[in-house]
Length: 121
Image (cartoon, rainbow, N blue to C red):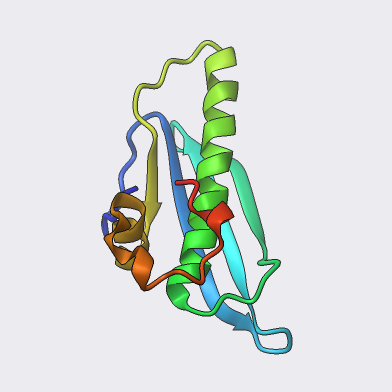
């Protein structure tokens, strides 16, 4: 996962993930959203309230990043079956804490409350 404020069109499958922490004021749940593009056109989109109430913005963003990664893996298989080769899978995330958490276990002491199933990335 990377953060790039300018975005990129790499010609292959590119994903963008984001969460609106505590966006639903009635139920106190965050909104998860991701979109995947292939050659500049949208091929997959998801937007829904998260099942659990996240305790932090990092947790909300990490949950959607995990969902996005699972979708990216599935889409990569689909793209492969269509005969298109893609060597690199890129997912953009606007949360530096999620990018650092996905890359390193150092932050796990401060994020113990995030369920194990979200450590998929």
